[in-house]
Amino acid sequence: MGKKVFVDLTHPFSVEIPRWPYFVKPVIDSMHTIAKGGVLTQRVDCVQHTGTHADAPRHVMEREFDGRRARYTHEMPVDAYTGEAVCLEIKIQPWGLIGPAELEDACKRANIKPEELEGMVVCLNTGMHRLFDDSKDYYHYSCGTGIEAGKWFVKHKVKCVAMDSQALDHPLHTAMGKNGPPMMNLRGATGKPITDEYIEKFGIEAYAEFDKEVYIQVHGKAAYDAKFGELEAIGQEGTWEPCHKYMLGNGIVGVENLGGDLDKVAGKRFRFFCFPIRWYMGDGAMVRCVAEIDEDDIVKGVADRTYTYGGTGYGPVNETQPYPIYPMADPTGK
Image (cartoon, rainbow, N blue to C red; front, side, top):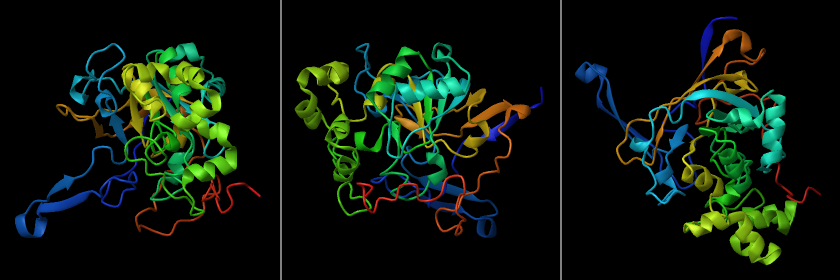
């Protein structure tokens, strides 16, 4: 065995960092500068869910499934986001919904059985981290999870789930679609709302998964209750961020926008370190995520990650994942 090394799994933070569609831009100002004051002291004002960050149960839940008030950041165990981990490579079509089939396929390729995940941190490498940018490709058209994935994580008693995409849930399960009070239903690359694009591309039955009213119209109330009823029973709208809610409501925390050199640990086991600030009554916090891994286990041939978003350079085409990966000029594919 080789020596243990650290691999950074965090996107760099700056005022130009890509952020969720209705988040304000970070503000960074200098209180002191070297030239004028002899020291450099900076202040930061930003949403704590900017860039690579952790979610606490209180972020999306009033109460957890055990009936108690949902926990804030400071109420979680200090190692809630840290522990033995595996990085699962998810194979899925663009805009796809990750479910048990994709998760179990990834487990098989990582040579780990689902029942071995108990107490572990599960990192998902969907390839989305390579597209981290202020773009529709990263936000509107990301793949993501839903209620079935949330139930799978709970069933296998994982400790934490770290995603390399815009959220723990598929974008159409969020306010980018027609969920929650914002219900932005953002316009996509064709100029149409992304919900309309999705229906044209995949059909109304596939879209029903993301819309309570449509699900009931297509599949019936009994089918809706069977799938989303546990959330509805505790006052949560079933199709609005169901993976978030099912996981966090059962005490499984999450990390979003995992990135950095994630491809170097794809399919591997390692020790995952992630510590949010001890924020009293916090709903989440920006974090530094790092993998400690035997140097002999690092995936060979993966170059160090470079970032070109925010005006830092006109980058070359990524040969392994050409940009953009979601050419949506005609969502019907014709």
